[in-house]
Amino acid sequence: MTPRISLLIASLHVLLYLVLTVRVVLHRNVHKIGIGTGGDETLSRKVRVHANFIEYVPLGLLLLALLELAAVNTTLLWTFGIALLVARVLHAIGLGGSAGYSFGRGTGALLTFATLFAMAAFGIWRFVVGAMIVP
Image (cartoon, one colour):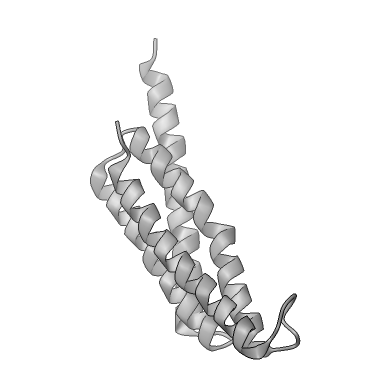
């Protein structure tokens, strides 16, 4: 079985990752900042957005693929995948615009946590149900 839903969702996340990466690289090139952030507040935010993406997305995509391989309902898979993508876009926009609280940052973080929690809960549930079925 090819995990087609998680493949598409992962591919879309990679495109977002590349956008976030290019933002950091271009800022570094324009302002001639090699290592670190050089005290540049805007670059610090861009680096944080990029790093935050990397801190949460891999676990989410791994869970999504494993849930798909475990034959979880496709509607749930689409919901989880799209929710994670929307969450990360909101978070990137929110944190990218301001180091303080913003709707995008707060909502993106909350939706990321809720999506990861829901996927983990379904993964545990799927394991328990599968264990009960096996003689």
